[in-house]
Image 1 (spheres, rainbow, N blue to C red):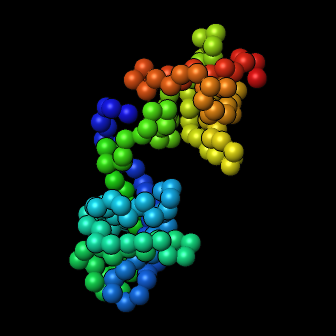
Image 2 (image 1 turned 120 degrees about the vertical axis):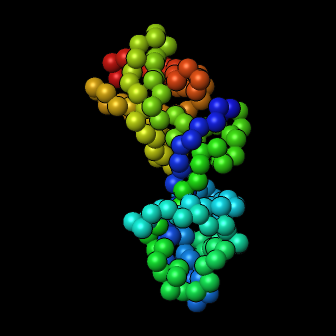
Image 3 (image 1 turned 60 degrees about the vertical axis):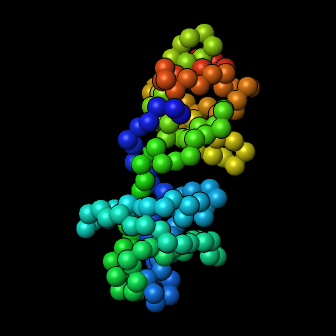
Length: 170
């Protein structure tokens, strides 16, 4: 996506404490999970507001990730951050390779079939393990596989449109 947007992206949340020197456990939504610590600055959003932190270091630890944030040097201060969402600006995400998309960039796009009929608008995407699936809002709600070539023929982010080989009455 070449156009810069000012959307916020949630990368994970602070889920607990790790040790006594201010390290935090992170439940990461990134893939691979330790990509969350490759961002140099996090905005942590909680009931108490928002605060920016520099990420000093971090790594995968068991099923999660642990991180050390600059200025967070004791367990009690870190405890206040449990439950905080980790957010960054959309334009901080790396550019996608051709034919790859962030799900958030597809949400809200209109989906038409090869005949030009509107099938609906992408409400969200999900994965079934084999491939991604677009969930279209509208009547009827449709679930359409996001498989390039076989089903998806065109994605035009600038025009806000996806063209799919999908029957109108399915």
